[in-house]
Length: 211
Length: 139
Image: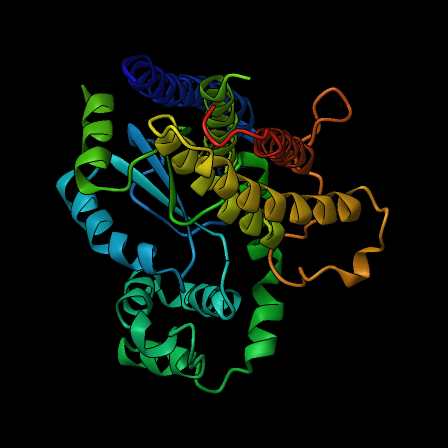
């Protein structure tokens, strides 16, 4: 009996520690691959950006306008950008994973000439429950929501909109795949993929780089 | 035949299979296909069946493990037949998400995830049936 308790606890302890040791090694290896690929794949010249290119911290976010976690992270990112004003270069890239993600991304791209891109992004993420319910999506509301912040794309044909911005969105997906991005939101801070998705973790990472 | 030893071996196989599959999906981020999910349903309880079995004197553990592992084995056989294209893919139930035949890992040219699942289920089924075929109720 006693022997079996030791066996049970031993096997579980061994399995759990093996899991974490191999996990750490795997992540390190993955980061090495990312580091070699980052210069070519992480940032191109067409993305929506905030802040100065020469800022000490460059944060790239792969996001999906229809993704709930991205919506949850939006206020966090805004807070960080405000807190570290002038020190972060923020870059947005797309990783469309849901039914209307590509349309939403194309609509967002369409707002760029107006200079209201980041306002539009926050609006779509904030009002996500209205237009992006996965059981009952209402993609027609995307244009209505953008109208609220003064960008009028109500007359645009959704298919034409997608066609117009397809190239960049597809390039983002290709790069995401090359970098091993499988979920949204995925953050890269100075070329390193960030594991945790919280204000504290991101802040600690940024502070560490600014020291 | 030492029942304790076989329970321990069964427990080990189930734990390795469970942690391994979680590693594939949670760390390597390989999405499990639908047949993999069905196999997980039958593999994960085996960890607990054998864990409890370590403290039981009867052969009941092996009745439970035989039922779970044989069902899992049936799914694993079907999955491997699909995977190695021994039956045509167009009858696979996986139409959305990850295809059950997409090759995600291949070690030494023959060790694949469905193959590992098949071996685990086969070993556990073999052990269970071996013990159940022993005449005495208390080993």
